[in-house]
Length: 458
View 1 (cartoon, rainbow, N blue to C red):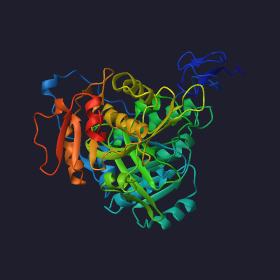
View 2 (tube, rainbow, N blue to C red):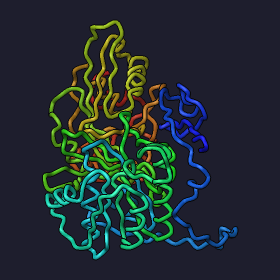
View 3 (tube, rainbow, N blue to C red):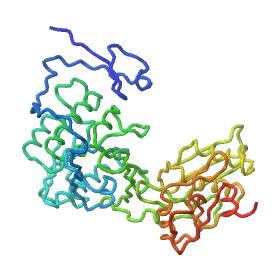
View 4 (cartoon, one colour):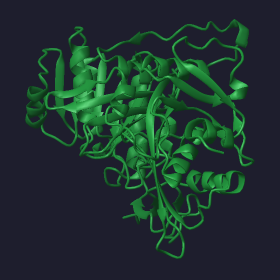
């Protein structure tokens, strides 16, 4: 018998090497190599026969017809928004999230809505039996003769069932449980995930069937498996939130058929996920009045403005090195803004602990929140309450200047809609648009001017 050849594959990036290595040269992670048996030439021939396609020829870009992709909309406008307007035929979409966050619940509800439109939907569960899926469906009120459930993990059987049923929509829950017999490694490994996703992508493109696949996440929050998985699919959605809180955030980080960084807000109820049509009211409904260190910022999440409360707590340190902690924003932004306040405004923060949090569990990563964070820190340090009807928008530079931001008109209109009386914005953003009549606009050039306008004093 011929000796089986083995190789070592990194479970993070897919790097292959003939011998074991402690540190991966590709992703620089430690202890990520797993031994796998190389497939022989005879077994490497796929049992799935792909029909040869006609050879493509180069075309002039002006001669190519640009047609908008047809989309299938669900009864969830928030879900449609994140996808760019609806589900595109032949698309391969990856949804990731923490265990128990509600990925299966969301896709089962979407499957039920599509089945209600007389579309055959195939829900493939690799982690639960058909009876367990039925129990969840009963709880969610999912009742449709067009929704089919298949408890299977063998890719060959799954492909055969798709060929026989020819559904209009397919859900794979989850990709880490699906295996291909020709690949000798265990389900969930780099080779299995890569090969199974490649075959599912071929089915989606050749038959025009939209396929949603669920992906597990690592403890760092990224989708488990090789990074190639996110490059292969057409869209990547992350389902975020705390298991002990009711609100869930569906965020798009990649979308070949729409804009990225769109966000949809859902609330987890006993009967399933319910949409939140006005997330700004949800994030501000528990805001404390008359508390120092609290400000409101208008942040853009994709094409939607969202008003969020930013809280800061500044207290004298009892350690040699002051602590700097941040939740919901980049932790490096807090010491940077504190250094600006200390150097340009004169606040002695070098012996103060700083804790900054974005209320509601949402994560903000745009520079327009700098001014609100800086004012929150100064408000807590001075123990002065900022005006509760103020909303702050602006990027802060290292020299203390307040720089212009994009889409200022949408941000201010959202603030005026929720009853805010004044908006503190960069002075460079005052021209080129007409503000609403029921809100006062104050333009500032520096952080010092913003603190004087919100907290008073010199």
